[in-house]
Image (tube, rainbow, N blue to C red; front, side, top):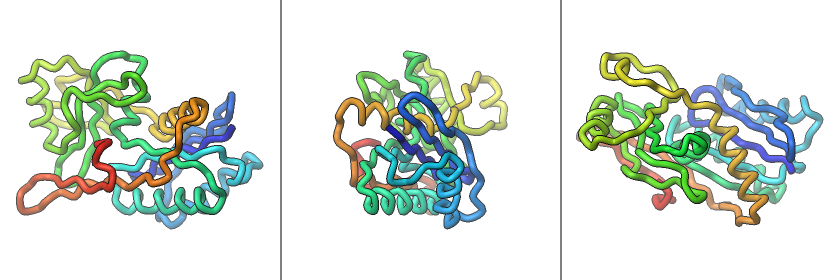
Length: 226
């Protein structure tokens, strides 16, 4: 079994190459342009003397995040899955974060920056094989979100992908998020071993901030996950 996990939602591309009983590679690569992603993957496979057609399945983070990165990542995996008939699975960043920290067995609030000073977050926990939310995923300012958690008396651990600044952020203990490509690869491996069907129609998940209203609009062909 050979699983490729991919997260292209940020400037550095997170990649995971997971075998049956070993991790070939879990790390980050900087792509000067997202157009260089195919070459980056080609060099990675060559370094382990592997071929793309050896892949059992591919797992991808479908968003939200960098618009260009998401499009490039989806284009690459759709090309691979079509050319070599490889099953495709997908998770949102929020789902992958909850899955990666499922062993904590408590409500979590993974937080990701989106444009115009807003974050994308939610309050949930990975239970019975899926993300279950106490507060549905949403986009708002970080101070407003932390205030909402306090007002609701939510006992949650906040997780972040990058450091934050400001008095309201320094008052909390932040748990850093790890490699989400590794998380989606491990989850995909579980799906394959469990005989669960692939999601070959995985759609990109974008957040488009509305400049005039200051609110965020979610754009996805699969709203039911987010």
